[in-house]
Image (cartoon, rainbow, N blue to C red; front, side, top):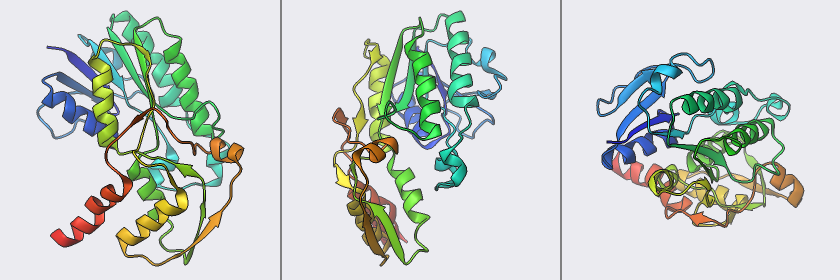
Length: 270
């Protein structure tokens, strides 16, 4: 039975990945700072940022899915001025480098790294850290795969919920196609065991919509009435902020259906 180590296995995407691995019959070991409550996986306690516990966590591992990241913007659900000048790199760069080094020592057979679509033109410090970590993987002598995904629906939800108190929302008209973690998890698990390596096709959501339309759909689902002020961004600025359209693999769950599950169905059930 294949033993798979998942970093970031307690996050939104990580939980979906772990669920699919368990259903597929793989042994799963989650590397996390604290053990969780589920009993159908192994827990390896440690910290990717410091390396504590990592060597022990890799013992006997065949495949690594590196879904760990540290994005202050995602954690708080909004931007602060510091996000435009600095982002921590201990997990995404130093942690990835350490993980690759120890994986080589353990002769890991496949290292799958989760990344973000559009990093080559993105200018935010977090994106630059993600790109630096990805380049370490691409330069590794290990058999590797890189899967780039569009931003996730739950992150867009957090960003828009942070604007709910505003009477008017300034929103770019830029088009992009965010994606649900469930679709990304399906694709990642497929890539982990299909026998191929290298840079994989990017994955995004099924619909490319303007941010203003995404915001309108969000307001309808939440029952909010806020004026939307469309903002025009140049293509260069939009790409610098990560607003691109993924033309690779497309997920199946739309933003409108995701919102229906999160808000409309939840209200009915209550």
